[in-house]
Image (cartoon, rainbow, N blue to C red; front, side, top):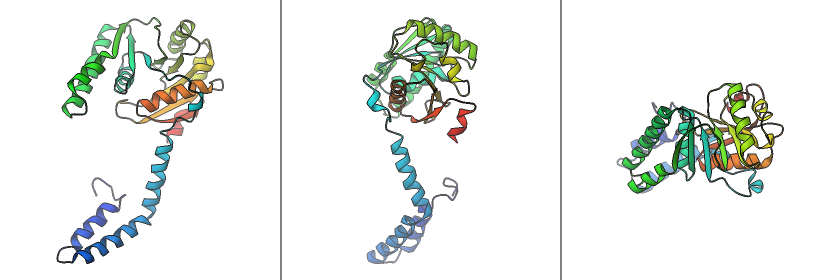
Length: 260
């Protein structure tokens, strides 16, 4: 009850079967379990869990896959703070090469240390080998700069300041190829206002990760009226490959209300 809060009847039904079985024949025990299973199968909890299963599976698919001609492989992440570090870590852990950029060498060193500790835990749990650990760490390139670099997609994760994000992404958009995805990690700032200062605003999108990025499964993909399906396809592809549950929402005041 401490773990299920009374919301899952199956563990309690199992305990009832265990209490029933001693001294009973195999046939009597099987009959009791069939009765318990049948009751659970027709319960409202089962119906909701089945519904949840199909909903979760539906969110594992890219609804814009037909618009994805080439999947991103190399990501630039701008900002080595908590969010940028987390985004970089889940990205290399899922097959991406990442260039993490920040103006602070200390922030970059701290980010690498955090990523190393995250991967070290996976080694201890035997989820990855020692050679995998080194390979993944090598996929993370640290650059003490804010200057644009060549990559397939940019994910900006600097402070939640509209003018700062506009200034940075305007500069990057002028130097990146027109088909490179530009994503801003924001929980509330208007993505439309960020996109309108950029060249090719149709490829600008919001990608709202939740903290800590390594643990929280949800990713909100925030589209503006100008966002095209190619940008949506790339954002979904990145999020799904990172192991996230992706939902796309329209830009607007308090768009994060949709997560509830």
